[in-house]
Image (cartoon, rainbow, N blue to C red; front, top):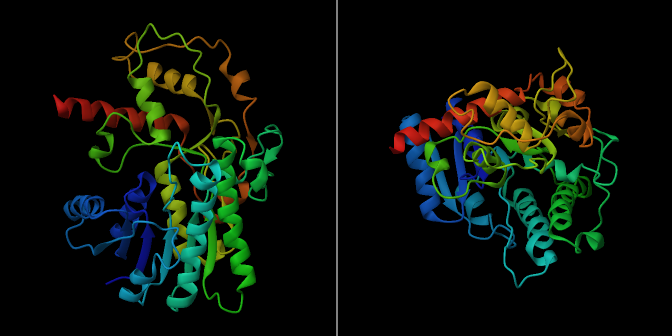
Amino acid sequence: MGEKVLVTGCNGYIALHVLDILLSEGYHVIGTARSEGKGDKVKNSFAKLYPPAKLDVEVVTDISQPGAFDAVFKKYPDLQHVVHMAANFSFGSDQSNEETYLIPSTEGTKSILNTVVQLGPKVKTFVQTSSFAAIRNEHNKTSVHTEATWNPVTWEQARTTSLQSYCASKKLAEKLGWDFVQQHASQVKFNYTAVCPPYVLGPQMFGWGLDGEKLNTSAQIVNDAVNSTPSSKGPFDSPSALTADVRDVALLHMLPLRSEKLAGQRLIPVAGASLAKPNYDDGRFNPQRILDVINARFPELKGKIAAGNIEDNKKVLDKSYHYNTDLTCKLTGVEFKSFETTVVDSVKQILEHRRDKI
């Protein structure tokens, strides 16, 4: 059996695609989920895709608690890689932004890193899911954002709004990871890499990911466009941000396990990014751009969904984040999927799921 990989939050939208890559390549995957039911659903789904594959799922209800992962590492002392994807936001109207976002996110990162140092002597790779929120400068969108850019927000500033708190939680959790590796250099025996995706779009790993009234925040944007009506006039200009295909985001979580040259790097997946054909526009999107693709590529939907009313959407998008991710392209060799490919594949899956439900 292949090397053992721990994937926290293995039932998540991106994590399911990571599991798909790992299991297809023969890794023994140990996932964590917050409940047995969620874990069983993941195991049963992958058992149909890869009958010989080895996938175990352990329940970790609260990742922010000290020692939350101790039992997992004691059960699997020969873990060789960790892909930390779980987020632990304690949503609740009676909680402060600090309690909802900042404390759970940073404590979750601290908890698993401490466990790896204490109980994971064979771990050689640690990949952390961060976010473009850890990079973006909301007050200077037109400055070029790169792998070296950090969101300037502080803990104190982050307490003011939920959006600021979310962005700060991503920045501070990732920053804690880098600081931990530096401060515990004599104990840390693993390579550390952070993946910083923007809005993640693309097909669900399994059709059941489309069940329910609401999908995850990013994927729901495409679903809303498909379910829009011709009478909807917009404007369809929010969110206006960067995006990447979920399959590319998953691949960037996997590549550090294969290549040590990605150690100590921050990786930013963005739609259309490529060294062969540099494109610093394709990664920007808003709902209007999604509607444009659907109306152009799915004639059966034209006239049945919104058309939108932004005459020059490119000017609107030009006000969004400017970026250069050439370093990520150079280090990984990935030719990132175009925005159009991502939307088309997503819509095809949604339409097929509709037909299957009839």
